[in-house]
Length: 143
Image 1: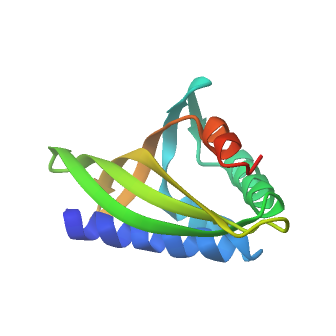
Image 2: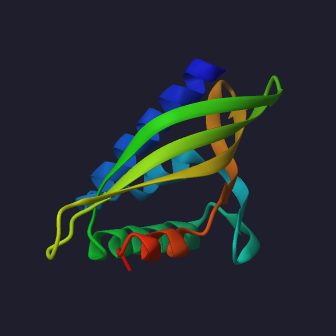
C-alpha cells in the first residue's frame, strides 16, 4: 500500500503544479477524491460530495493560490499509519513556494493528514485534517 499511496501523492503534486499554471482539469481532480469526504481544520469539520460544486470550488481555490503568488507545491515526505488492508492515514509534508514581487521567493513547510481508501487498487482521499493555513501564511508574510 505504501508505494501505491506514495505514487498517488506524486500524481497529486503534479496535478497541483499544473493547476497553478491554469491547466486545471476538473475530471482529474475528481479522480483523486472519493464520492463523499470530510475535511477538518480550525474552522471546524465539513462534509462534502465530489460533484460539480466541489470542482467549481477547487477551481476557485487554485485561482486564489495563483493570485497570492503560489509558485510551486513540493512533496517532502509521506508517512503512513495503516488502519486496515483498505484504509490508512497518510501524513504528508509539503513545501509551498510563493513568488513575492517585493522580496525573494518564500518557502513554507506544512503538513496535511489525509484519510485514504483503496478501491479496486486505487487510492482515493476521503478526508483530510489540516492546521491553520491562514495563520501560517500570515506568519510568513504571504497574506
